[in-house]
Length: 197
Image 1 (cartoon, rainbow, N blue to C red):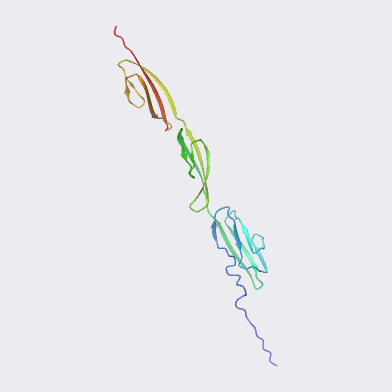
Image 2 (cartoon, rainbow, N blue to C red; image 1 turned 60 degrees about the horizontal axis):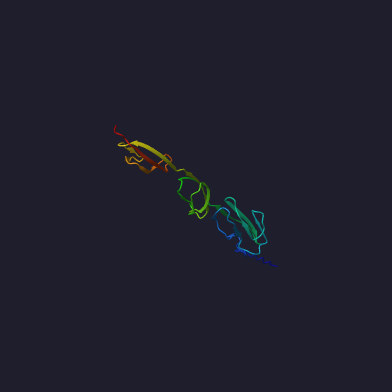
């Protein structure tokens, strides 16, 4: 008796689970972003994610750049795949600003302010993620000074801006103070008469 044994090799599994097992690709995301990760089959025998979950899809919100692994048994073979989610850089900047009283300042988001204080602005950086700019606004004072002056007839007086006057009157002069802001000096010039005896 001759017994013929035929061995059949299956060269291609019913489901090529080891290739592109996870539908999502490696990507860079902004901090706080949630991503759904899914495998490319709906009826596996078992699924085991590195997060401990066992469903075909999971929702993740990584707090740092993370590689997620999944092991899937499709009944033919057991394969493992991974995907890496990289967190994009975010920026936090301090922006100290000093302006003179009566002036205003435009914050990075376009808001115009003129009151001293701390302003936190969130803007979109070039990488598409939020960046936080903290502006500390300081108001420098301006000064108003009254400057009464008396001179004898025939004398003159140099004003703070260098102008020389000899006529009685009120002269308002604007000068730059040491803090870089304008100060207003009001000079009231009185001319005292002279007498010939």
